[in-house]
Length: 269
Image (cartoon, rainbow, N blue to C red; front, side, top):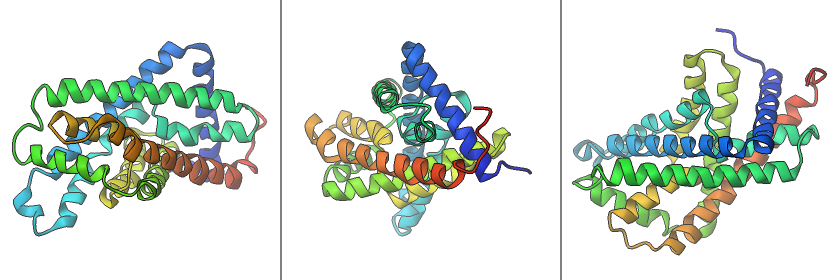
C-alpha cells in the first residue's frame, strides 16, 4: 500500500488544522458538539480497555504485562472513532493546529479558543458517557472491576505532580504521532492501524492522557474512591493537561512542521 510521505503528512496536518480554525471562528456550536463526541469516544475506549484489561485477574496476577497489553489493545478504538468520524479531541488538536500557526495562517487567539472549547466539550462528553453508560448501568459495580477502578483512581492522584506531567508528555507524544500516522493513510484500515500502534504503546506504558482521565477519575469517584474534585484536578488533570500540550504541540506539531513543512509545497494553501 502506498502511504503519504512525511511532507505530504505535514501538508495534510496543516489543512486539517485550517479546517478546525475555520470551524472555531464560524461555528462554535458545531465545534463543541464534535468535542462532546470525542470525549464520549475516548471514554468508550477507556471502559473497553478497563473491562478487558482487568477482566482476567487469574491470568494477569502473575503476568503484569498481560494486563497492560490487553488494556492497550482495546483503548485505541476511541482515537480511531475520533479520527474517522470527524470529532474534535483536545490532545490531537494540540499538534494539528501548530502547522498553521508556524506558517502564519492562524494566531494564538484561534488556537487557544479552539483548545479551550474542545477541552470543555471533551469533559462534558466523557462525564456524560461515564455517568450514563458506565456507572448507571453498573459496568464497574461488581468484582473485580469495582476495586480495580477505585485503585486506578487512587493511583492517579497519588503520583508526584512532576511525574504526572512527564507521563502526560509521553501520552500525547504517542497520541499525536498516531494522528500523524493516520494522516499517512487513505483507507480505514490504514488510518486505524496508524491510530492503534502508538496509542496501544502509551496505554501499555502507563502514560497519562488528560481526556482519558476525565473518564477514569470520575468513574473511580462514582464508585466511592476517596478523591475530592480539587485533588483530581490539581494532582492529575492539570499536570497531565500541561504535559499533553508539550508532548503534542512541541514534540509533534512544532518538530514535524519544522522538519517537513518548511520544504513542502504550500503554494496551493
